[in-house]
Image 1 (cartoon, rainbow, N blue to C red):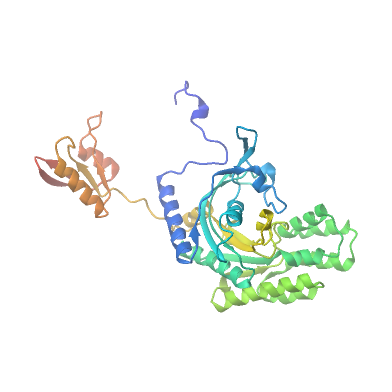
Image 2: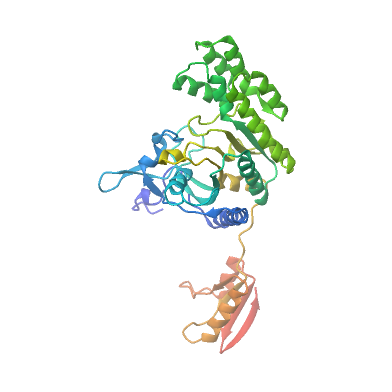
Length: 405
């Protein structure tokens, strides 16, 4: 390594990575499969700016802390951020440029988001995502469609050993409804419940001025995990209309998924309680066998678009493409980067027919690399041998000679 070269020119920031040919090839395959399946499912692709005003991500329903956003100043002193998610920009578009379209609106996207997540073991800052948003319907049928599409997407990518955990944040909110806790106390209970840290949850509950019945009920929530029998156990704890309606909602969604043959992928988890401000109903996440983090997640967020002054319920999900790549790699399901079919040797200064032949070969789907005489004087045969190219087409005097390496 040349010691005179600035080391920062040779490194990349923490949390991002270069995508080399093999991975890039497989990533595009994944993106194209998802893009096609979303399209066939009636979702129209949309793209949003890579950076937006900070204000967009700081509403009452914000799901990402400002400390996790990459900020910079625009000339004129407005604070900008690299987009930390794509759902919020889509909500902006739906509320401004698509508000008069017939409902529901089905949108899809593929793109990168940027977050500074300091608590994760994997210090990733750049996330490649693909997802869909179904806007304008409160029906459980919409939630079932979204979950079904997430399952279909994973199957289309060649994954089959996965589990979709579904929950309902309104159930947890209902259990807290009459407890009189402040926002921080509720958030502490939510976090410990979602982590299924029952010991810490028990200690936290002991310090709170709530009834023993409420404490006991909340302590049981992390264990409400499993088959549809969980709904019966959860109903025994339901003392408020909010709890009961949330369970009826999950039962409806699960029943639809069961009816179309997808229940084998579903586990009910009433202890999955993600952001209480952001989500307003069904939530779900997809876990791959032998991987300790989700490859997809989503849910219902009926209050989000109201930040823009209009009421439009919504539900959707996002898939983490790099995590899916890792899962496919572990399962030996990645595609191999295609080798070059032909090394083509011709002189573009004098051989127009050679150029026409080159175009004809590529139009037939063959991967053709043009040989460039190198400064080291290597022959086409030597170059083809190093690159693993088995066939050479050599143009000379208007004729084409085929060489097998």
